[in-house]
Amino acid sequence: MAGVLRLTFLGTGSILPDPGRSCSSFLIETSKEKILVDAGPGTLRRLEEAGVTPSELTYIFVTHFHPDHISDLVPILFALRNTHDLPEGTLLRVWGPRGFIHFMHGMEIAYGKWLHSQDGLFKFYELKRRLLDFPGFRLIWGKVIHKNESVGFRFEIDGKIICYSGDSGYCVELTRLCREADLAILECSFPDELAVEGHLSPSLAGKIASTANAKKLVLTHFYPGTTNSNILEVAQKYFSGPVELAEDLKVYDFSENGE
Image (cartoon, rainbow, N blue to C red; front, side):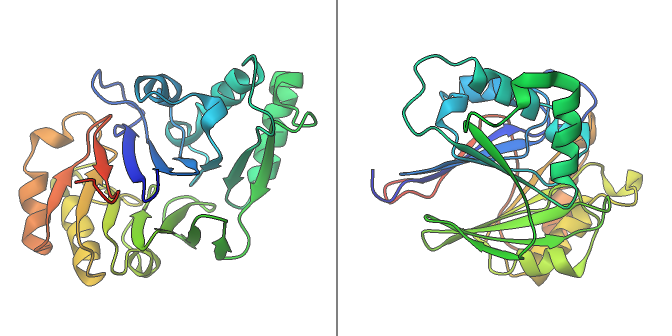
């Protein structure tokens, strides 16, 4: 399985119901790791549809604490605790921004023993150093404009760069994270005419991708009706590279024999 690097979108919608889109989440798979990024409602079901069980996950990274980005974290941990015949050495490492340990302590109070990690099945960490080297990848994170704790991510894996805005308004830090990215995954909650503070519109996403000299821009995190407008054409006015709209269960394969 040498050279495996694959990204699967699990949720590309928002907190408002859309029958075709779960909430924010995607999966990065390498030959050794399965990395879940955000875990909005519907993630656990989409994982099953993608053929991945909670016991196979090695890392989860969370951008912020809004329900549409974190609400399925508890069900994923519940599922892990209720899985029989777990592989020896199973350990899920869950990382979040400033305040994450306090957030999970609140969840432990609410749900009791099912979220206690003393049995070693999972462990919680808070992002502190801006650059983190893991055995198979590097993660660089930065503060973005949304909530106080909100961060964006830059994954450097096998010579490829995958960047993710989480929820964010236009900011210099996000542009830095996306520098020379093979895939810049930027939220596009609303079309330009309905843009709101703390979120990106297609023109702003296009400007970030262009300034960062990204190789491909993928728009995600759509509120209902957003994809019915001309958001693709608007983004393409500001970014000359390929622009695509994310879809649940759509796969981007960077493997040696991938697309």
